[in-house]
Structures are given as C-alpha cells and as structure tokens.
Length: 149
Image (tube, rainbow, N blue to C red; front, top):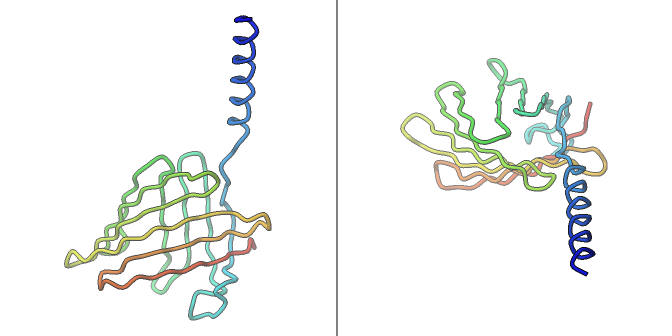
C-alpha cells in the first residue's frame, strides 16, 4: 500500500510540475496605438513601441523635444534618469500580469509614486492600468487600452 501511495505522489508531482512549466508570461512586444481613452488630449491615438526579452521590458514613445525610453528589468529593480528626474522601478509578475511600481524623484525632492499593471486581453489588446500619487498629494488613475498596429 505504501508503494502505491508513493507512486501516486510522484506521478502527481510530475503532472503538476509539467503544468507549471507550461504556463508562460505574456510578451508585450509590438507597436501599440492607444484606443481608449480616445480623446487626443488624453493620449488617444498615441503610439508606443514595446520590446521584451527574458530580462527586460523596454517601452518607447515620441514626445515633445524627443522621445521617452524606459527600460525595466523583469527580475527586480531598475534605475533611470529622464531629464532631471530620477526613477526607481520594481517589477513583479502576478500571474499573467506585469506589475511595475515606480518612484520618480523630481528636483526639490518632490516624489511621484506609481503602480502600472500591464495585461493582454483575449482580444490581443494591451491594457495598462495606472495609479499614481502625485507630489501635490492628488492621485491620477488612468486605464488605457492599446491595439497592436
């Protein structure tokens, strides 16, 4: 009887292990156009390019005076400088969602803390949910949906 139980436990462990290996994290790579919010003043129609490999997620978009490029390490903490703003970000996978928490430090030691949650829908659209606490104490919440171009 002990042998049967042990074989069942081993068989179950192998089955569960294969199932866990089969689960993969999404790849957000591509050229994306924001479709909601749709008003141009809210970013509608704006484009971003995302590249992703096993170690990093890079997002780029055009902006006034040049473009913005942000590189996130998928295994932990990233540091970058955007103009005079220092940004420290941490990433973690939550199932099929990528969660990016960042602290941006502006001149005068003003800070903006944000949390982005990236996910791909069954329709292939990229959704980014942003919650930010601004230096003035206000909060910003934006849910943007992007279609692959």
